[in-house]
Amino acid sequence: MYYFIKVLISAGLIVLISEVSKRNTILGGILASVPLISFIAIIWMFVETKDVQNIQTFSKSIFWLVLPSLSFFIIFPVMLKNNINFWISFSASTVVMIGLYYLTMFLLKKFGI
Image (cartoon, rainbow, N blue to C red; front, side, top):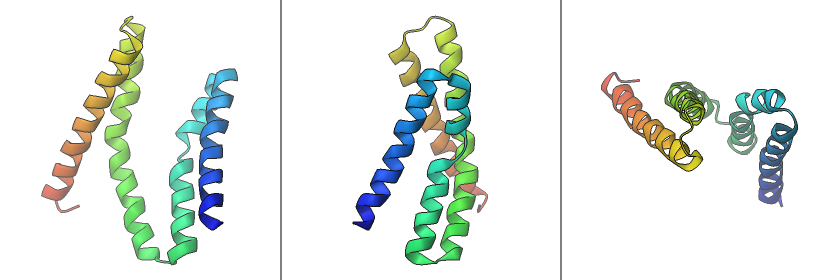
Protein backbone atom coordinates (compact mmCIF):
# COMPACT_ATOMS: atom_id res chain seq x y z
CA MET A 1 0.00 0.00 0.00
CA TYR A 2 2.84 2.39 0.89
CA TYR A 3 4.49 1.79 -2.50
CA PHE A 4 1.18 2.49 -4.25
CA ILE A 5 0.81 5.79 -2.35
CA LYS A 6 4.37 6.78 -3.36
CA VAL A 7 3.63 6.08 -7.03
CA LEU A 8 0.29 7.86 -6.87
CA ILE A 9 1.74 11.05 -5.32
CA SER A 10 4.76 11.09 -7.63
CA ALA A 11 2.72 10.50 -10.79
CA GLY A 12 0.10 12.97 -9.62
CA LEU A 13 2.69 15.73 -9.45
CA ILE A 14 3.81 15.06 -13.01
CA VAL A 15 0.23 15.15 -14.28
CA LEU A 16 -0.47 18.31 -12.27
CA ILE A 17 2.54 20.11 -13.74
CA SER A 18 1.69 19.09 -17.31
CA GLU A 19 -1.94 20.18 -16.90
CA VAL A 20 -0.99 23.53 -15.33
CA SER A 21 1.57 24.08 -18.11
CA LYS A 22 -1.12 23.72 -20.78
CA ARG A 23 -3.00 26.65 -19.26
CA ASN A 24 -0.16 28.80 -17.93
CA THR A 25 3.36 28.15 -19.19
CA ILE A 26 4.99 30.48 -16.64
CA LEU A 27 3.31 28.80 -13.67
CA GLY A 28 4.03 25.39 -15.19
CA GLY A 29 7.66 26.38 -15.60
CA ILE A 30 7.85 27.51 -11.99
CA LEU A 31 6.37 24.24 -10.77
CA ALA A 32 8.65 22.20 -13.02
CA SER A 33 11.74 24.14 -11.97
CA VAL A 34 11.15 23.51 -8.28
CA PRO A 35 12.88 20.22 -7.55
CA LEU A 36 9.66 18.48 -6.51
CA ILE A 37 10.88 15.03 -7.50
CA SER A 38 14.07 15.56 -5.51
CA PHE A 39 12.07 16.80 -2.52
CA ILE A 40 9.81 13.78 -2.66
CA ALA A 41 12.73 11.37 -3.09
CA ILE A 42 14.50 12.90 -0.08
CA ILE A 43 11.36 12.63 2.04
CA TRP A 44 10.77 9.00 0.96
CA MET A 45 14.43 8.19 1.73
CA PHE A 46 14.20 9.74 5.17
CA VAL A 47 10.88 8.10 6.05
CA GLU A 48 12.13 4.70 4.90
CA THR A 49 15.76 4.74 6.11
CA LYS A 50 16.40 7.70 8.45
CA ASP A 51 19.90 7.60 6.89
CA VAL A 52 20.85 11.27 6.99
CA GLN A 53 24.37 10.60 5.62
CA ASN A 54 22.95 8.90 2.53
CA ILE A 55 20.47 11.76 2.05
CA GLN A 56 23.31 14.29 2.36
CA THR A 57 25.29 12.46 -0.33
CA PHE A 58 22.19 12.19 -2.52
CA SER A 59 21.52 15.92 -2.14
CA LYS A 60 25.09 16.80 -3.09
CA SER A 61 24.86 14.53 -6.14
CA ILE A 62 21.69 16.29 -7.24
CA PHE A 63 23.50 19.64 -7.10
CA TRP A 64 26.32 18.52 -9.37
CA LEU A 65 24.06 16.65 -11.78
CA VAL A 66 21.59 19.49 -12.23
CA LEU A 67 24.33 21.40 -14.06
CA PRO A 68 24.49 19.19 -17.18
CA SER A 69 20.69 18.96 -17.29
CA LEU A 70 20.52 22.72 -17.79
CA SER A 71 22.06 22.28 -21.25
CA PHE A 72 18.80 20.72 -22.44
CA PHE A 73 16.84 23.83 -21.45
CA ILE A 74 19.25 26.05 -23.35
CA ILE A 75 19.67 24.01 -26.54
CA PHE A 76 16.08 22.77 -26.96
CA PRO A 77 14.29 26.15 -27.12
CA VAL A 78 17.03 27.62 -29.34
CA MET A 79 16.59 24.79 -31.83
CA LEU A 80 12.81 25.16 -31.78
CA LYS A 81 13.12 28.92 -32.27
CA ASN A 82 15.20 28.19 -35.36
CA ASN A 83 12.34 26.07 -36.76
CA ILE A 84 14.11 22.76 -36.27
CA ASN A 85 11.69 19.84 -36.04
CA PHE A 86 10.46 19.11 -32.49
CA TRP A 87 11.75 15.52 -32.38
CA ILE A 88 15.14 16.42 -33.84
CA SER A 89 15.46 19.30 -31.34
CA PHE A 90 14.38 17.08 -28.47
CA SER A 91 16.70 14.25 -29.48
CA ALA A 92 19.74 16.43 -30.11
CA SER A 93 19.25 18.30 -26.84
CA THR A 94 18.92 15.01 -24.98
CA VAL A 95 22.06 13.56 -26.59
CA VAL A 96 24.08 16.65 -25.64
CA MET A 97 22.70 16.51 -22.10
CA ILE A 98 23.61 12.83 -21.74
CA GLY A 99 27.10 13.57 -23.06
CA LEU A 100 27.48 16.33 -20.49
CA TYR A 101 26.30 13.95 -17.76
CA TYR A 102 29.13 11.58 -18.70
CA LEU A 103 31.61 14.46 -18.79
CA THR A 104 30.41 15.72 -15.41
CA MET A 105 30.68 12.24 -13.87
CA PHE A 106 34.20 11.90 -15.27
CA LEU A 107 35.26 15.29 -13.89
CA LEU A 108 33.68 14.67 -10.49
CA LYS A 109 35.52 11.35 -10.22
CA LYS A 110 38.78 12.91 -11.44
CA PHE A 111 38.60 15.65 -8.80
CA GLY A 112 37.39 13.31 -6.07
CA ILE A 113 34.02 14.95 -5.60
